Amino acid sequence: MVDFIHNNKELYGVEAICRILPIAPSTYYQTLDLCDEKHCFAREHRAKRDLHDLHHAEEIKRIWKESSGRYGVRKVWQQLKREGYIIARCTVARLMKKLGIQGVWRGKNKQTTRSRDDQKRADDLVKRNFTADHPDQLWVSDFTVYSNKFRLGLYRLYY
View 1 (tube, rainbow, N blue to C red):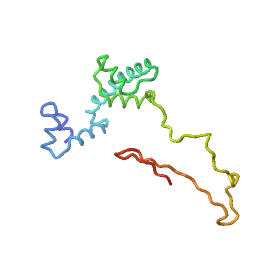
View 2 (cartoon, rainbow, N blue to C red; view 1 turned 90 degrees about the vertical axis):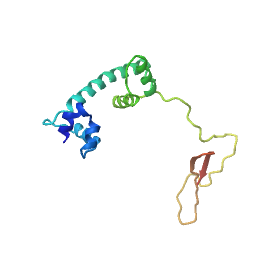
View 3 (cartoon, rainbow, N blue to C red; view 1 turned 120 degrees about the vertical axis):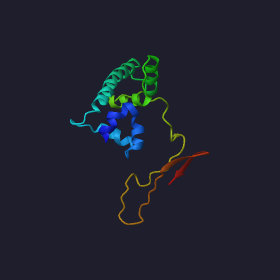
View 4 (cartoon, rainbow, N blue to C red; view 1 turned 60 degrees about the vertical axis):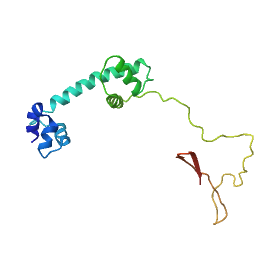
């Protein structure tokens, strides 16, 4: 059935043939990806994509190096478009991930606690010795902060 679709797709189109036959277009394309030596009609499609990927990967790496490794997916994609390349942003993202390159992350780290040296701290009554000889001899506690973002703002839960 896949051979029939492949042989007639130029005349009728894959989707039109699949509407009449009891097969989903995704099944046809998945079968193309699982090409073996006997049925190699997908090889031309894969070879073309691999050639495009090689060429685009070189250009992506060049633009990324020219930016001293600062550009991320969006800026590399915009630069490629300015240079006249027709390429999808998701393709740039896929190739950058495959190449193992990414842009610089900007922005400040969020300060979660503010240490104040002018405030008196609690005395260390156990002198950092947290072992006890018998039950109810030593009690310790800890604060754990969970942040939840709701529609009205940021709420913190203390446990």
